[in-house]
Structures are given as C-alpha cells and as structure tokens.
Length: 457
Image (tube, rainbow, N blue to C red; front, side):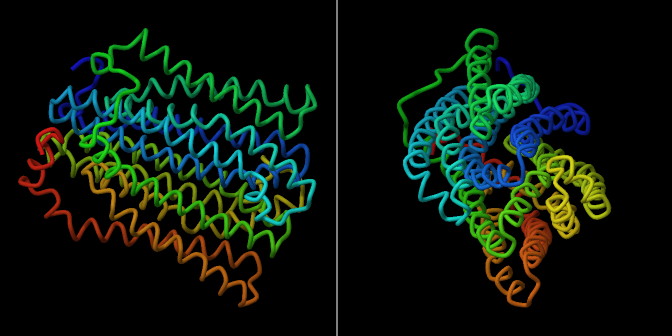
C-alpha cells in the first residue's frame, strides 16, 4: 500500500511515541489558535475575553461534530489498512471527506443564521453580546475548512503519518500568531480581528492539505476527495464516528448551561473564568488526546491484523505515559493556578478567580487522562458506543450537581466542583468497563469478524 506506515510490526514503544508526538503537537497547535486569540484579546480586558469565550463553546461544539469524520477516518481507514484492503481504505477516505463537507456547510449555516438568539442565551451586557455575535458570524463561515482539515488529519493518522498534519497545522498557527496582533491592534478591529486572523489561518491549512495530497503524496495510491455516497461505507462511518461526535456535542451543550449558570453566579468574570479555564485545561486534554489518537490508530491496524499481544502492550504503555503527565498537570494547576491563569488574562480579579477554578479542576486531571486514553482503546477496536454512554451520562450529571452545589451556598465554585467530580467518575468507570469486557472483545473470533470488509457483509 502506498504512502502508509505498517504499525503491525516493529517496536511498540517507539511506534507509539513517534505516532503520538506529532498528533499531540497538532492538538496543541489547534488549542493554541484559541489561546493565542485569548492572550491578545485579554489585553483588551475581561469583557472582550467573555465575548470570545461565549463563542468558544460553539467552536468547541463545531470541533466535536467534526470528530465524526476525524475518528471515522482514523478507525475505518486504519482497520482497512490493517486488513490489507486498499480499495476499502480509499473508499472510506473519500466518503469521510464528502460527509465532512456536507455537515460543515449545514452546521456553519445554522450558526450564521441564528447567531443572535444563540449568543443571547448567556444574558451578557449588550455591548459584549454584539461583539460576540459578530465574532460568531465570521468564524462560522470558516467551518468547512475546519471539518475538511479534520478529515484529512484522520486519514493521515490512520496511515501512520501523523507528522504531516503537525507540519501543516503548525504553519497555520504561525500565521495566526502573526495576524492576531496585526488585525486586533494594528487595524483596530478588536475581537473581530481575532476572528479574521483565525479564518485566514484555517483556510491556509485547508489549502496546504489539498496541495499535499494532490501534488506531493501518493497516500493510498491517490483517491478522489469527493464521491457519491454509498450506503455500506456511509453506515460504517456513522456507526464509528456518530457516538464520538454525539458525546462531545452533548458535552458542549452541558457546558453552555454551565456557562450561563457561571454568568448568573459570577457575572462576566464567572463566564470568563469557566471558558478561559477550559482552554487552559486543554493542556491536559490535548496531551492525552494525542496519545489516545495514536493508540486508536495503532490498535486499529493491529486489531484488524489479529495482533492482540501488541494491542495489550500498547494499552499498558500509553497508560504509563499519560499517568506521568496527568500527575504533573494536577500539581501545576493545584499549586500554580493563579500564575498560569495570569499568563492569559493579567487582570487581577480575573486571574484570582481563575486560580480557584484551576485548583479545583486540578484534582481531576489524572482521571481525565485516564478517560481519554481508554477512549482510544475502545475506538481502536471499533467500539465507540461505551465511551459515549459513560461520557453522556456523567457529563449531564454535572447539571443537577451544579444546581445542588450552588443551592448549598457554594456559589460559582460549586460549578467547578461538579465538573471535577464527574471527570473523576468518567475515568474510573471507563477503565472498569474495559477490564470487564477485555477478554471477550479481544478474543480471536471477534477480531477475525472485524476484518470482514463492508463490501462483503
């Protein structure tokens, strides 16, 4: 097969590390888009940060929906590669890209049309609301670039070539870093300037992906970007990606409710603390997501090839790696929360409130990494439903817990504790679930059945 790396042979630790590092770096780059905007806009004041933060939940929701085709690509293309079926790999790649385009146009159109009523949910001051609406309308028109780039990234990850998305996304980040201060302060566009800089950077990333696949790589021997959808491939992609996209999208809805509650309890400082704190927490999330995605791609190939001993060893290795970093993030947030938050919002009242958030949230960081690592295991073997069930249930438990804690006179801190407690629960439950079903789901007959192509079923 052309343009791919065989992950079913060779040293496991080295392959996982080499695959995970670029994926993790790519995740950090994607996170850095928001953090760069937040850092520059933070110089305009906490109200400007609150405006962008209110849209941040919606951009997060958009990224969650794009996971349908990112994860769909990683698993469907990866398992086809492991089963030595290049024809299916090519079809899955084309179908994922086509579906990503359709969804992105529909979703972006909805956000653009209904920007006003969506933003007014937060009940912010009128001038903050107007800025947020303008920001959302600009960002929504760039969503096709985001969705298609996510699908391209998933295809490269499945092929074991995670360095390519890293280099391309890195180029976009550098461009965003350069354009942010120019548009925000140089052209005097304020928060709109941050939106324009992000839009241009996302479009650039998309165009580089197109150039790379069309004129540089022979990935899977070349494949059409768009195709007429066939039921057997579309159904498989939706079966793999829809649970992941659903759980992350519903998670965003939960956070919209929590953002409104934070705004009611703490004003724009409360909203800013939750949204900016979530961006900072992404340090842990993106690190674990990098290892999880690498683990998923690695397991997808080895599981389809029947190399179960490599699946188990990769799981243990990844748990060890993420455990070390999770412990580091826990200590950083608990003991240095104010200092970390002040990097992004130097306003005293803001970083003191943010420090409280990071301290409470810090207790759950190790368990967050455990949850996301276990998601990679489930995704790799094609079982995306269990993580979705656990995440949806625990995430929605945050709403009654937050209400309960607020009524117990814990104020806005009650919301932070609701988030922390449910994160711990997700990690422990998902680990327990996999331990219970491990012997059955990794048995040889089920592995052999998984290798059957959609075209043969």
